[in-house]
Image (cartoon, rainbow, N blue to C red; front, side):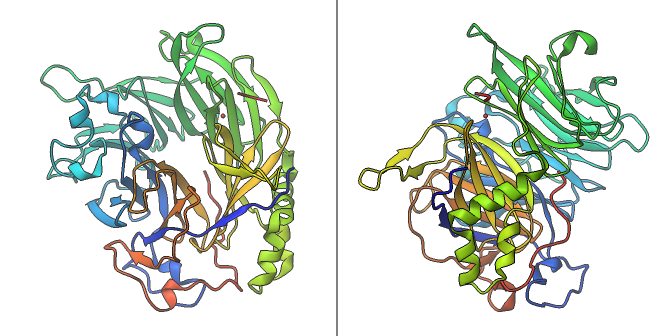
Length: 473
């Protein structure tokens, strides 16, 4: 571990997503967020747009089964889709820009409602009610799915969804140990059928918790192909080539993690690495093409190692300064949120006279605790370095995150959006710019005053539940 002082940042903006009308929870300090809706999944068009396009939109799936779109510049709601599903929403994504086959002006949103939000107009959602739906957010009838799809087994739940081949194919992981594929290709003059094309039924023996498409570069040449990673409660991470005619022919690698999985993804310059996060809050990294494990990343002691790292980087003194029990420093990291292969600018303090800015892509891990703190770690081959402490935004566990690359009012482009069980969306500016301490705001952009806007750091302000849910080394 490298234990130099990490940077502490406060949120540039905090938005309370919704307040539940079905609960009557006393507004006690540390528990006031329990009267709000959980944020289950968030998405941004950032990963779907060409590099020169900017996005100021974030979509959040709430526990009241609605999807809400926010403008990150103002923190205000631009659109709401109520009653999206009859069951909890598992995951949402924006369609990739190439799906539309349109010019730059159309991609930028200059063709209709919401043009100033610079986002692609279709969102896909998957739900535990067994349905997958596509919504056109340009339509005046957004509550009616443009493309409704349904799994074909009784009581089959859609636990994860991913879009591949430019958005023309949707893969869905289900609780029946299946990966189902839906056709989203446009036919001349007709909307996509959304027909079920087939399913992989032999890859897993328990529920499929996550599916992820990725375009990768094949070793030794510049040829690119699309692969699909699937993760399951059976502890297996499988890699398929869905272009092949059968499930057996499509199977490329089976990575036996041995622990129930909840989050997987690719990393590396050519996406040659794969990471796996488990329900036991452990992590491993792999070279997926050879099915070789590269590292267990601390094994079952990972959370303790990460807590020690942030403790050595200044967390212990921060805990003491706000009056919390210093024993909490030993559990600074209680759960893992997810990973991202991205550029996060940081100052290297190897030389006090000539500090340098590290701007190369790397595998980063976001972790947190029930007090609402988040920590960003750079996961290098020879060290794990805590680089960011996300402080003062959340009051409970962080559930999901995404990147936004649009210019905001401060001219920043490198921003992280986090959503949590406290019903809050927090915007974090990693550019190093200084901001005044923001006020919490509701979904209409109005400041929240009183006890519901304060945080009591002397108590456990988090929910009991944890989030269920990069060249390799």
